[in-house]
Each structure stands twice: as structure tokens, then as C-alpha cells.
Length: 522
Image 1: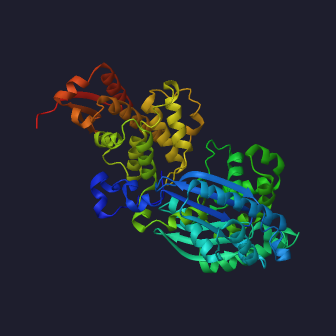
Image 2: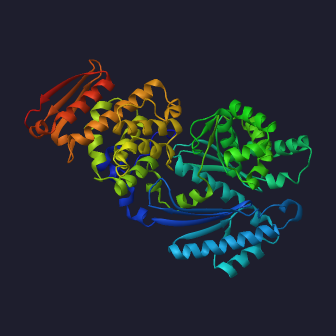
Image 3: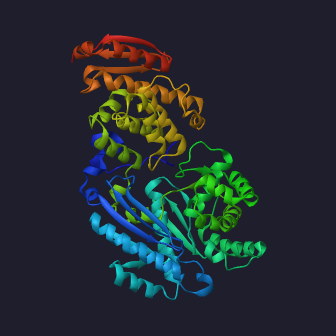
């Protein structure tokens, strides 16, 4: 219920600290060198500045600002950048240059995509940006744009395999990914700004889109792959799909759709007042204007590529530029575990206790899948990171942090499982919770296992403040449903009334009988 495929494996010299997870990423000098990285993406529709912070394998957004400039609007008709778009883009870049200087950002990379590379006045704009802002605008070709965007998907989705489809204002890039690498790439002129110039007749636009996609498919060779959608227009359509389905979680990253379900949404959008939907979803007028044409392209992608599933990636070219600067040994790390470690380091009362808690509880989860173990490990790392919240709201804060945080390598059921486990770390009952609509993303078995994990953390976290393993050891006989706690001499004194009550609550969640015994002296 997390990222596709097995969790990335670290180098051998890392294996001694956390078993398969290795040493914390932020201890690595090459990661510390990336502690703050600035990127500006000058696209056909928007200009965005992002500053990544923290050196975590899952990107933390220190700063994020976007201006809808429309630089490529009308390019297909005039061959030149939109005059108003140039003015707005230049103003944005001046501001971003000053912000980067104020934050002392190094490196600070500025890239431009389809509009600037295709416009006849693109070189003049490039020179003007350098002259007036001091920023060197790196104009990348379509192949490089596709590669960087696909790398962004791999940053947040290490096991991703299939076809990345990144739509901008003037182009749409396709790239095949798998085994942590980017393969064949194709750049197409299927951005909405371009399609505005084709024909007012939807049948002629469909024929135009089909011809281009058929040619691209011969290079990409789709084979029932997953398609990973990158780009603002796709994200708006996905958000509208959530609206139609009354989906309970509005986090777009790793939102998954079936071809039939998405087709139903495209049909719905074709007969719905988009202005009314814009107000319900908080979409800008500039972005919503491009949605009908993006819908036409997406419908044909489903028909031509015949994907098994359509997934949304919130990560794209900007995250791809961050990925570009990571050495391979850092790229191979698990983004969820690294982000949880960084959170524990900066927000927990006792950084490092999460590892001890996991070791103490691990006997309860023998036989668990690698995907489930990584969620258990993340939960242990995060179990005490909301301690500053008011006691009445800690359980809710834990749940919200897990389900709504900007985390890579975590699908929607995984978010809810993690959130529910952390809720039960602070609260025995979930009845009447405002989060109940999200529970439907889990099976009943998953809900029960999340509750048991939460109550295990609730017991282990207070049984011993130093190290629960020094106070006792847990044994779990699943066949007999027997939970045993073997206490050390110190553990006898620590196993007071509250600890006993929490141990009993854990046993109840496991539907187990209990046995408490004295651990033999070593």
C-alpha cells in the first residue's frame, strides 16, 4: 500500500543501522550539500520558484511561488512570446532573483521549456533576463524536458514503472520509466495553447491529436502500462475527478484512477458548467480555460496508450532537477523513511527513540510484507512528533500530519493506514471521528491492523522512556493468539497500572490472551 515495487535497497556499508534501511540520509555529506536547493521553471503557462530544504530524500518545500504568466499564449499563431506574458515573467524572475539572494540559495537553477525554446524571440528574452536579473536561463529541448520530468516522478515514486506524460502550455512530453531509470522520450506539440490554433472543429482536433499520439506510441511502445500524469492541467482534471467521485482525500500525489472511471469524468466535464466547478475546487481562471482541450488530449491518451491505470504525480521537472543533483546512492533511498527520520530529528521529544520502539515491537509483525514493515517503521519514527499539540487534539494532529503531509513513496491507503495507527497511538477509540470518511480507503483488516499498531506504540512509548527493550521483550504466537511480555528486573518496576492498562488494550486489539513473566537473567 505504498510505492510500487520493493523498497529501494541501500549500499552495503549502510546496512548496519536500520537493517534494510541504512543510516539516515541527512548524515551523509553529499546530502548535506543539498540542504537548500533553488529551482525556477519558466514554462509556457506559469513561472514557478521552488526552494527545497532539509536534504531529505522526500523533498521539503521551503519556499514555493507561482505566477500564471501565459508566456506561450498565441505562440503557435505568431511565432513569438506573448508580450504581456514576457512582462509578467520578467517581473516574476526579478522578484525570484532577489528572493534567492535574500535566502542565500546555492545552487539556484533556472530552466525554460517549450515556449522559450520555440519562439523566434526566445533568445532575445533569454538575453534580457540575464541582463535585467542576473539569472542565466537554461533553455532545454523537449527530450531533456521529458527526462527531467520523468526523474521528478522517480524522486517521489521510486518503484514507478510505465509512461510519464507531462503536459505544459505548448507541449506534452512522454517518457518511459522503470528500474529507477528514464528510457525512451518523445516531445509532442499537444499543449493546450498549441491546440487552440488547430481548428474550432473538435473532430479535426481529434484527428490531429490522434495522428501525433499514434506516432509517439510507435516510439514509446505502450503495453498496458501505468500512465503517470504530470502538469497543472492534469492535476485540475484529477481534482475534478475527486469532486465527481466525492473522494474523501484531496491530496493529488499518488491519486489513482481507472481508465473507465476517468473516461466517466471526462464525459461529465463535457456536460458540466466549468465555471461553477472552478469555485468548488479553487482552480484559477487561467488554468480552467485550458481544461477542455486537456480533456480532449487525455481522452485520446486513454484510447491510444490503453493504460492499465492512470496515476497523478505532484512531482515533475522541478523535483527532477533536485534528483539530478543527487548521487545514485542517495537516489536509492526510501523517501518515506527518510522524511519520517527528518521529522523525528526536528520535532520529537527524544530523537532516536523511534528506532528503539520499532525494535521492541518488531516481534509482533513477523511475516509482514516489506511494504507493511516500512509503514510500521515510519509510524514508529513519527509516533511522538505532535507532542506539542494540545492533548485533546494530538490524535487528530497525528492523523492530519500523516494523511496531508507532502510525502513521497506513500499512496492514499498507505497515508490513511499511517494516520490511523498514529491516531490510536494517542487514543483508544476512533468512534465519531471526523476522519471517518477516509477510513473507507482501507479494508476492515487494514483498519484492525492499524489499530493494533497504534495501541502497540501507545504501550511501548510509555513502558520505558530510555529503551523498552531494556525493560522487557514481546513475543507473539499468532496461532495461539498469545501475547507474552517478558520483564527484566527494571521492567518489573516500570510495569505499573497505566502500562498494564495499555498492554491489556493492545491484547484486546490483537484478540489475544496475555502472559507476563520474568525474563531470565543473561
